[in-house]
Image (cartoon, rainbow, N blue to C red; front, side, top):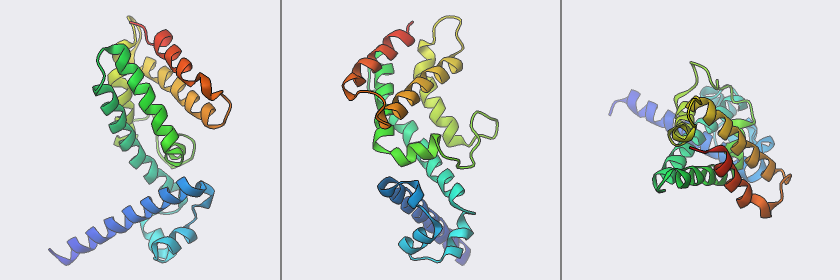
Length: 192
């Protein structure tokens, strides 16, 4: 292994450590607790080392979002592939989405609430974000209904899931109605 290859591997390892530490800190204490000073202390590198990888917190949030998008896409595909029939696939996808949001609130915020400097719904949207949408579209596109554009339907269904995730987390919806709300969403919105 050349010196250059070793340096690149070490750099990639430091970057993964920074992202993992930021994510861990955000999940434990919220994104306000994630500062370059605290990250530098936790990973035992200087702040200039952090800045050699990321220009600031915004880029770190973006890196966490991209990592989370890949994880979300995998979870959605796994859930849908384990279900038989369109109704079961849509329900499994919806459950997986809401479970991801509940288990990973800081990642979910990085993806959908915070400014990570990422372009959404544009040509220059990063691949992990496109893939997360594609994971939704693969299942939801088949239930869009006649004359309905599959991507448009997917956006609408995703918006409903996001609303449920956000309102539930904020305590704006009664917990005991969660299953009924999800059943209504699947039954009323996703009709063939």
